[in-house]
Length: 520
Image 1 (cartoon, rainbow, N blue to C red):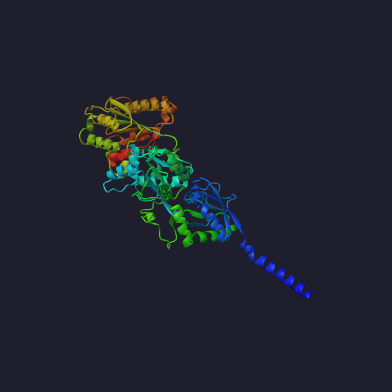
Image 2 (cartoon, rainbow, N blue to C red):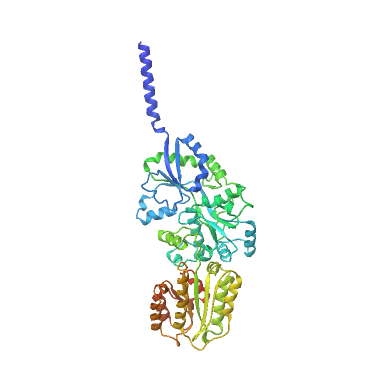
């Protein structure tokens, strides 16, 4: 009896000890708000649970800034990038509340081109290397028709947009407020023909819509996976833009600090050599573990990693200006060009060179982003003491641009300058355009090299402008100050109409027109 009692006591003691020691190793389930791109990790999650006892309950949602993550039932977040989320915390004054974050793998945002399109574009490039400016230029002239995830909902689409806009700014640094004061991506945006709420949705749709787009802008990993799927007529040729890329590091964020122990188990497992290799094999993302050698397709250097803006307002302005990528957008610009006698000689040569540059002759990066684009509505009015010639085209091809070029190349000049009569005519054209298509942005560019000495007065122009009503107030004027023009009067007109004056004397007519492009 004593032996049985002793055995029973020892058994109970052992069970109690085992229970006490194993309590910290109980299986844990963590709820994760994850980028839809990470659905390709599902086959590995069972191994994660077997090895660590931690199960990840993944909720795949397209959210560019993890909206709704804080204060929710999520324990972790796993986006492609946490940049917009951290900027939102900073904007709310919650910098100290930044969650623990660990990069798990990396992939740059790049361009995939069909072989034929890639050959066409590389043949145009002097060194055969392509930039975002080259892609924007080709989108504007109709050569490139691309798919990109919606930057309003997709962190991948947002990273792509930031990359293109940073290249368009041409500063070599992160975007600033002044860099997005004018949207220089109109021509680029005109080439978008395919989108999706997430890049996963976009990639899934593309094989069935290959006739609609000959390019995709997405993570390198997604394009390599798509090529490996054998769903395409021909594999896309992946281009790492020469002017830089935004790099995503797919960080795992700890939202619920009570789960730090389980979080560390997951992170340590994901960063193991063998797991990093398996992640790379399955997803084509680059390892963050320096001991793991990248697979052959991932050995090309990322090159210039573009910086992300440091203020949320910059990103939000950029996304708002880009708008809904599923909706077509075309602008109308009315150019009022002074052809008084003082414009003869070098000045008119400069004006014609500026227009040629906007028509595609400017090989610089800024020129490629500022050029006229397919679908844009353009009106040119030559004036002196009266309207000398007027022509409106919708850009469908080089023939339309040549037609405008002929207007600017015309040799007739006038002896006087009716600046305010010309602006009055411009507003009548512009308000008709607003009434015809209220969704279409319209702007006026007024270029003059002298003071107004004919036609109506500035005060009379303002009276007529006010009588045109709300439609006129939708249209800003951007005067270009050149030569001996009255800068104070032009600046006053710009302020009255919601535009701003640009001084071509400080640079050139070409630079002035490029500066204005997109400011409407």
